Image (tube, one colour):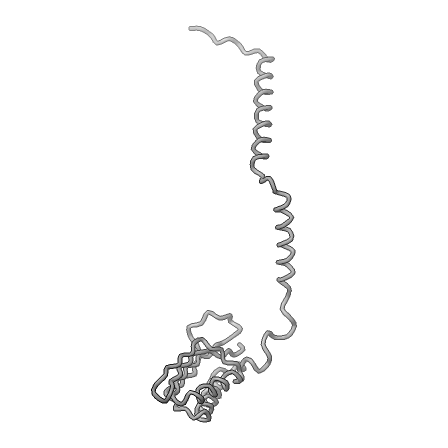
Length: 171
């Protein structure tokens, strides 16, 4: 059995030095390769975007986003009855025949908890001018009626309008 020659201290220090120098050189090479060539310009652009984003995320104005009469009050049942009666009168005033009218709280909603939507579904038949007049009345309606869909189906002398939309009440 032969014994391995003993490593002297000088060779050990030299080996550790070479390993440390190699590790340092490799880390510098990897650090240089890992940063993009236009890193400073990209960082400056990112800082500009972050500043613009923070400016855009300013707090909401002290007042409401909508005028006071754009939303109905907290009593959605009373608002639904009042809206139902108002829409029935508007349909009659526009010389249209009311086929169906439904105003009810919207149960399937993903709206914020501060708003309670009322679903509005309306179908009426009559002359085209009456439908246009009814749509103009809906655009001036208070609280605001937001249209989800309006469908006009022409018939021989009349048109049938199907309207689907929502009214929002404050919570």
